[in-house]
Image (cartoon, rainbow, N blue to C red):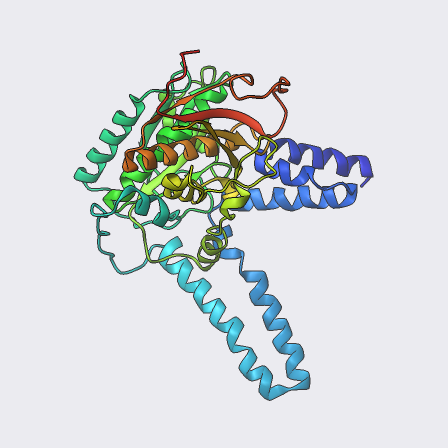
Length: 404
């Protein structure tokens, strides 16, 4: 085959990639390595929607360990006999995972306990993405409480005048890497891009997520891991291709202790967070870390931490904040996106806004969100809309600024 054929095939695969996958590929400068990565990601995307990739990911490691055991046997037979137990144990775990989660042959599990006694900071701090679910449906009580939460938060003030929706569906969707989820909220914004509406999606859905966490339910934000064709087929008449855009999906249900090995490793790796000094700054160039424990901001210390532990696509932590004291008794926190992603970064910023607002409400710290001009933020030079970091919104304590 010619190089032009390989290039055309790579271009076709690249065109089908999601925003996150493209961002990874675009960082590769060597043409041959770029083509290899595109092909690799393409194979991964095909496998991930078959529902088997979660179980197959550890298989190459098992095979490699068996090969090492064989080579070691030629030199040290007694040691190899012990070493071979490791890949055998891993293989047994993979087979157990297939039986219990893929084939769903397993003992029944109890309903999880509620977290009604926890404060909102504990809920935001301790929540984990749930990627393996029990097969039982939600109880009527839990489903009713969830739908009431959706209705309540959709009625709250929004950044955009555009209408957003959270559609509730009971059906298996083609998603990755979550297993056995049967209940989902589908976040929908207008087809015509409206960044403020995407911020609203993140802010509104995160508040619902914290409500279901209080009920004891598990949840998982799913962006590039959702097959949109699968989602559209389930929504059917509730989705209009010409008017609607699917922003993300959120799986909701009862957490299962039967979790594939790869997902357990995945969960552990993606729970790490950047330190506060890498997320909060005192200057618009994001070079001077904000003294979050200083006299001006110490009362918001737990709010900073709640943002630090906010979920984001692939745990990218794409949001940054600039804190400013604008008067003796008035503070402002500006929210920025650190990447050019039009959807996932905006959703992540909306999630930060939700956690910040819920934290301030818990502390009794009054304030409100405003979208300010560069002049109102004390920036003399006009900002290019594509310039990074991208300003989104500000929170102002005891807002006394005149309406813009």
